[in-house]
Image (tube, rainbow, N blue to C red; front, side, top):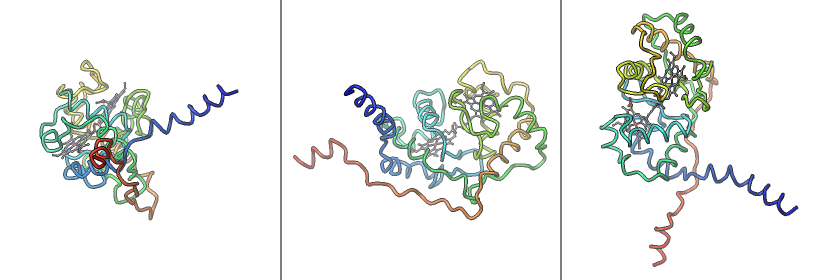
Length: 230
Ligand code: HEC
Ligand code: HEC
């Protein structure tokens, strides 16, 4: 009996421990990211500012580790943010904070399709044939494939990222040998990106306004507490 109670207690505790990130610390760190990624990590049009808001924690952590290890390169970001020297706790806190920002319902953050000169129907066919198995029919990613959501991401960033994949400057699908985009013309990429940019439209709830989350105060660090008591 006691065993069962203990087991039940352990099961209850596990999710709590797994989500025990310090969100206020994440918010603090985000001030260093806002310059490029926006105050709510909404990103911006243009290839230099991907949206981070709402991306899965695991993907965000992996991306930051890839920058730190050099698998992905972004010297400007590394120099301006101190990402290289961030503790694992800081990385987990900023990832949890960014993941929590759900901008999808607010029409102000709806990404605008880059539809100029692109064919949505062709883009949809490519997406459903070649992308949905990993990124999902709704473009919201599949954790079991480690594939991130593309829905809500800025079209210019997706386009230039695919050009990086083609040039082998970034690994797609975590596989240096990946050839997903090898035969794609710029026009085909543009069509696919244009279709992806429409996927967040149906998530918008008219009149819904995003508000930054209210957070508990930052947890004192053990070292701070010890210094305060000394
Ligand atoms: C100087 C501008 C700049 C600053 C400041 C900055 N970033 Fe970035 N970040 C970028 C650019 C540009 C990219 C896209 C680079 C690429 O293509 O890999 C990026 C990409 C990322 C990605 C990958 C996104 C994806 O979809 O794969 C993550 C995660 C990220 N940044 C986290 C952060 C965090 C966390 C901070 C603050 C601690 C931060 N960035 C600060 C410019 C910046
Ligand atoms: C076999 C699975 C798979 C398929 C099929 C696939 N992807 Fe991916 N894709 C991934 C994975 C895994 C990643 C994450 C790579 C990483 O962590 O850097 C990714 C990353 C991306 C990214 C970068 C996202 C970001 O935030 O930086 C883009 C853009 C992308 N894929 C577009 C596509 C498109 C468009 C198609 C269809 C033509 C496609 N993918 C098909 C697995 C796949």
